[in-house]
Structure formats: structure tokens, C-alpha cells
Length: 368
Image (tube, rainbow, N blue to C red):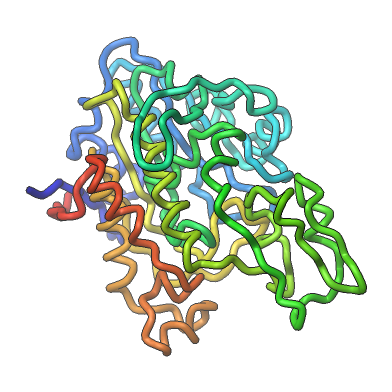
């Protein structure tokens, strides 16, 4: 068996081939309008980007998705959940201000913005999944209460998940702060003392006060640490690392189990769109945007989250590596383009997703 993955490739020679028109056609051709019935409350799951990040999906490209949902009879709203780390999206007030500053305004996107897990990330609903890591998952109430969902993801690399695509956007993205803590709980960051300069930035941003600077070096209390990863993305000298030998698999599998919770009771009601553009080495949670690892490829759509992420990864890895990207050294050592960004296996989530029935890794690409 294979799943269908539709693609709108980039490049245009006339007005009718503009990206907005391609997105509208892609939504229809992929059958995503069939995920929406009249008067559905439709959650469009996006990532608004951390302040300082500039490569999140442009709100102008979200508008045709909103319009397509409305044309199908749905009542769309844009949504995301509060972050586990202390940044500019850790509560609904700051989160909304950040979203608005980045252009996610009703006048631009044609829909309201709602933070799915409430003011401080405590509006959750437990959903039973009965899988390897979790019996129940803690999901944002707005995700559970919505009638249908369109998961619109910026496909890029990720320092913990390897890839940030549909699975990451839906699983981690719809987990409440407590849920995110559950998914991160196996991560235990380590300090490379030879690289640490004792600046204290990691300690400042640690939400658990688990890091102190002693004799000019950062020290992490693993009893307090719950593995949110904030120290990794705030450490300028890259002196903090993760033990990838066991953490990557567990983390990715937990995201899949959260996806299973999101999809429960919504068979045929969820569609996925991956923007394989600005494929950066890090997530949009980073407060910066590094040079993309490959040129822009296109926009994909499917009803299968595993297939769309597998297809997106395959397209990125088959593309020519950007010689100006930070991945140059890894590519030269024989790593694939994605692994060269953060040196971890990104495929665990796809294998486990297929194992538990989230989707299929085999796919058929259909150009529109």
C-alpha cells in the first residue's frame, strides 16, 4: 500500500502560476476540502515563529488555506500552543503579540488567532492512546474540541526531532506545556566544559533553574532538568549537547503517540501541508534563522502525516546541498543533508508512526 502525496513545485513564468494559486489548487487536488464539512470549527495548526526568527511560513501563504477552508464551509481559526521554554510564546498574551507582530492578523490571514491551550498552557484534555510510552496524552483543548484540522508545517531540521514537519507540528505542537514536558522528559543535556565560556545565558533561560555557573562553567542539575531543550538553542558557543544515543528515538516516538491522540475521533478530518521552503538547520522556535541547507523545493499536501514527512525528507536529501550552509562539513563526511544539520537519526518517528498506524512510509508523488 502507498499513500498519495501531492506537490506544487516552485517556479513561475506567468501570473497564473503564482504560489497563491498553486496552494489553492493543491488544497483541492489533494482532497483536503473533503476534510471539512459545513460549519466545522477548523483548527489550522501553524507555527508563528519566535521573535527574531524570519523563516516561519509567511502569513500570506496561510491565507489561501484559510480561504479554501471557508469555501468548503468551515469556520477556520489559526492556532498553536504555548512553549515549554521561556521565550516570546510561553503564555497567550506574549504568544498573540508575537503572532501579530509576525503578520498573523485577521486582516492578513482572514481568520482569528486562538492559542489552543489557554492563557498559561493549562487548558488541556486527556486523551487515551494506550501505547508504549503513554496511556493518556495531554492535548490542547481547542485541538480536541475542533471538528477538523489542517496541519500547515514549515518543513525544516530540528535539534531534537531531526526534522520538524507534520508529525512534529501536530504532536509536539498540540501538546500542552505539561504534555511537552512529558515528551522531553528523557532528554538530559550535557555541558562540554572545553567550549563553555561561563556566560550564564543558559542559566537565565532555564525554566527549572536547573543550571548554575560554578567556577566559570555551566553545571546542570539533572534532577531538576526536564529536558525542554531551551539551553541548547540559547547557548551561543554550542557548549551544551544532548546524549543522542537514547534520547532521539524516545522523543520522536512520544511525538507520534501525541499525534495518535490528536487524530483520535477525527478519521478523514485532518489534512497536512508541508512547506519545503527555507529548510533551515533549526526549528522556528530559535530566535534566529540560519542559511537554508538546500534551495526551496515546493509545497506538499496529503492526508497521511507519515507519508508527507517521508516525502519531504526524501526531497530535501536528494537536493543539492547549499555550500554556504552550516551542514557543509557533515555532508562532506557522508551524512544526508538533514542529518548533517544536527547529527541525529530523524527516521525513528516515521518508522514508529507506521508501526502504530499513524500512516505509511511508502508514497506516490503526484505533481499538480
